[in-house]
Structures are given as structure tokens and as C-alpha cells.
Length: 103
Image (cartoon, rainbow, N blue to C red; front, side, top):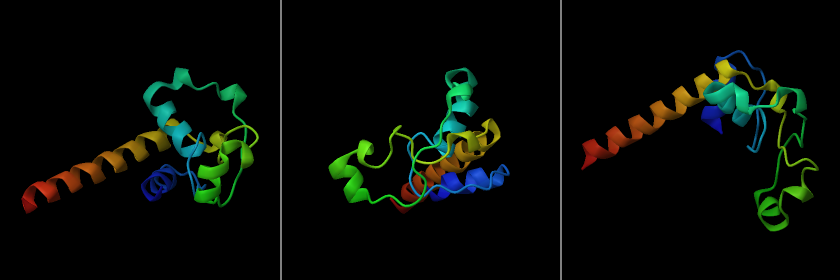
């Protein structure tokens, strides 16, 4: 989540998600990969704020969000998605290189 929120900020989106499910970060990623997959006219805000992981796992999304969305997908942009993907790819590559060097 940290990398995703950093990517949002890097692209000028001043929105932070504590958890992820169909909110700004995931919407941004899909917009960056294939904008045609997002029905932007149907984006709706879901539950915003903290989510108990144990409640989510034991009770499911229906107990937390009526529409299954955690966050505000309307905040996502293709530019933010590109920044998120770059941050995640760089972090994975760095981790792989570190592990490879340690071997």
C-alpha cells in the first residue's frame, strides 16, 4: 500500500488508501494498462477509512462496503497508475538484485 500511495502522490493525487480493493490505486493501475476496461461513468465511492483485516477476512466485503469498493476509484488516474507500476516494478527488481547478490 505504501508504494501505491506514493505513486498516487507522485502523480498529484492527494488521496491515500489504507487498504486496497477497487479504489483509487487499483483503478489507476487498470487505467494505465488498458483505459477501456474502466467504466468511468460508473465509478462509485465505497468504504473509506480504516478496515479491520480480521473483520474483512471473517465477514467479507459485504460487511464493510455495500458496493465492494474500498476507497474512491474516481481519484485514480492513468498517470498515477503508471507511477504506481513503476514504483512496484523498481521495488521488486531491487529486492531480486539484493537477494541475488546475497547468494
